[in-house]
Each structure stands twice: as structure tokens, then as C-alpha cells.
Amino acid sequence: MAENKQKVKTNSAQSNSRPPVVVVLGHIDHGKTTLLDSIRKSKVAPGEEGGITQKIGAYQTQAGGKVLTFIDTPGHAAFSKMRERGAAVADVGILVVAADDGVKPQTVEAIAHAKAAGIPLVVALNKMDLAPKEAPIKVKGQLVKEGVVVEDQGGDVPVVAVSAKSGEGVDKLLEVVGLVGDLLELKSEPAAPLKAVVIESLLSPKQGPLATVVVKEGTLRVGEEISAGGTLGKVKALLDEQGARVSQAGPGTPVQILGFSQVPPVGSEVKQGSGEAKVLEVKPALAPGEVPTAGLNLIVRAESEGSLEALVAAIGNLEAEGRKANLLLKAVGPVADSDIRLAAASNSLILGFNVGIISSAKKLAEDFGVGVRTFNIIYELLEVVEKLLAGFQALEEEKKAPEANVIAVFTLHSGDIVAGAKILNGKFKYRDRVDVVRDGESVHQGRIRGLKVGKDEVTQVSGGQEAGILIKPQFEVKKGDRLVIP
Image 1 (spheres, rainbow, N blue to C red):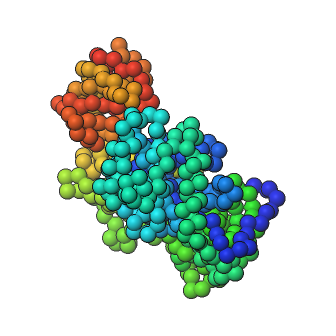
Image 2: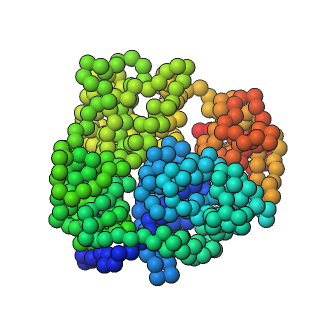
Image 3: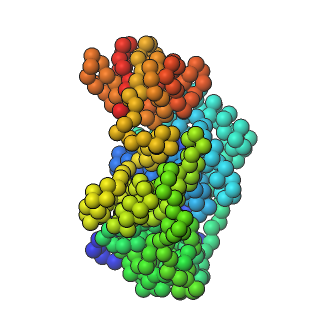
């Protein structure tokens, strides 16, 4: 949400009722962002890196005369904490399940987050235009196994069939969500002490620290002194999801705060007044004198606190041949001179996620011979760390690219084309980028959206195995084509 100079408007609540805060949860690729895109009548999904949401967004919309506040959460496995945080802030959850794919690992995880937060669910059965007729019955059976019993099976969880891409069923979904919100009888007093939660925060190159918050109680106003998780601030401006300035934000309202002295931690509560807050410092993960010089040492920079949290957790779970990464520094913002100096002293690699490198740091990295790599997609960053852990070799010296031969082609009931392939070398993983090579020329590029060995869905296949490989965007793969992971 970029700052602009639109006329200041007031966003306030004058009654004791407030809009329900709705979190959109579900597995990666099941259409969460496309659904919000349809709701907001904007174009967000095409711009997401790799087709996945990688940070929390908060938006408001109207349906049937009712205001609804939406929180979007990422579906990739690394962003579990962000989904957990979104569910904890919300009053109602929309569980998006692709009818043509069914219940998946992050679907199960989302259900667990909703149960832990104690919020009611509404199931959005998405991609109905792509699914066979029997798909809804199958998906509902899968949901029952996870403790989600839908209304037509004697439970209390509504199910609405939708197509996020075409917009079919979206109005009905909003109507049902509004009714569920009404049943909660959400009450709030704008004059009560402020209670707002930071759901995302970042360091803007132009505006400085920015925090996206959802107000649950009280009213947040421009000019107030505030604190959040040990970080002080004074509200210089409040911005809505369109970047327009608002003078205040009442209960149930999402807004960005400009005015914190530093990036506040995600999940922290925003309070009025400075309280006992102290200015936070970015410190290395290891104290001076404890910095290792052997092994895989990493310095990680990310665009936001939420992304950094996800990266640190995911990197901490990676291990190869008994080796794990040593995380020397984790911080929000672009790669700086101090990062280069620390990396040079500790033989570290610097990884940036959705951040740049300041010009002086780029020159310093060249002088010191420090490796700096930046990424826009989290799983690509994690793949690099995993490969380095496995061999501690430079990426430029990796072995021959993974390759497979197409030995058969199958067409599913959904119309999708699956390549039956023999893996010649390397590993093919779910969501890997892949080139389709025909007569020595690349004729199509896409991503692996499904892998099967026999009847079993798998996340990766290795050299010597045969597997069914589904590639999206769709393409007419032919027998004799080669599949290459670039």
C-alpha cells in the first residue's frame, strides 16, 4: 500500500457492532489469492511471484450492505506461522479447497489453525469448473476425516461451490460469510482502550518502517504515540489498502501505520502510549566470539518480518548428511555494508528475499569477494540452501541438470495432460520449473504441479524411476520429448 496525496478521509465506527475479520486459508495453488482478487475486483494474483502469496494482505469489501475485513495468508509450507497468526486475529475462516485437487497438507494445517483459534469455518469449494461431477462428494468425505463436518452431512460448516476465476458463486460465499459473522454478534466499543495486532511489517525504502495492523478494539488515530513489541512510534499517517490516508481506524479495520521508529515484530499488540517500550536493535544470531568460520554460514535479509520469520524457520528445518546451516544474522531490509563485512569475516553467504542491495554494499561485496544471492520465490531460496548443505559446492559447479524422457502421454478426466516419464538423472520435485525440449529446442516452460508414482502422489522422484508428471501452464507434451529442470 503506497502512500499518496488523496484527500484524508475518516474510517470510524460509531456503533457497538464491528465488521467480522475473515481469514482466507488453504493449500497452495487452490485459489486463495484469485478468490480475493475476484472479491476485490482487482488484479493481484497474476503479480504474485511464482503464483503464490508470500505475505499477509488485509483488505475490506462490502457485501449485501455489510462490511467484511479480509486477511490473505500464504499457502506455502514455509509460511505456517503467518497462517497461524492470521487465524488468531480472525473471527471467521474461509477454507479454500480446490475441487479438482481435494484436501492437501496445508488444508489440514489450516483446519488445525482455525480450530486452535476457535473460529468458525466456511468452505469455499473452488475450481468447480475444472472438477468432475463426483468431486464435491469426495472432498466432503476428506473434510469429515479432518473433523470438518459440512451441513449436508449433518454438521454445521457451510459449503459454497465457487469458481474464483470466473466469479461464479462468490456473491453467495460472501452472503454466507456475512451471516456467520452476524451469528457471532461481534460487539466493540470505539472508545475502549486500543487493541490492534501487527499482522505484517516491513521496511519501505521511501517511507521507512510500515506495519499492517487490524484494529480489534478502540480507535487508532493519527498523531498518537504508540508502541508494539518493544518498538516505539508516533502515528504520522494511516493508510488503507488503496494507499489513501485515513484520519482514524475503528474496530475491525485493517490499516498501515507509518511512524514506528523501527520495524515492529509481527504478532505484537499495538498499544497507545510509549509504556515501557525500548528501541530494538538488530543483532547477530550469534554473539561476538561465537561466529563460526566453517560450514555453511548464512546471513538472511527479507522484505518483511513475516517473510523473515518463515525463512528462518524453514532454514532451521533443513539438514543434509547431518549438516545444518549456521544463521549468523537475520534482519529486515536491503543488504547493507555491515552484512558484507560480517560475511567476509565469517566466510558467509548472504541470501536476500524480495530485497535489493544498496550500491555501496554491492561494491563492497565485489571487493571482498562475498557471495550475495537474492530471490523472489521462497522455495527457490530453500532449494539453494538444501543443495549447498548437501555438498558445500558452488552453484556454478553443480552436476548435470535433472532430465527425463517422455515415454507415454495420458489425458485425465479434467482434461489435463500428464507426461509418463523416465527420470534419467537428478531429482524432479513438486513445483520445480521445467523445460519441455523437442528436437533440441525448448518449446514450453512451466512448473511441475503434480507427481505420481503408480497411484501414489509424491513430492519428488529420482533418477531411474518412472512417474506421471503434470505440468502447468498446460501444454501438449508428446512422446519423445525431454523434460529438463533448468
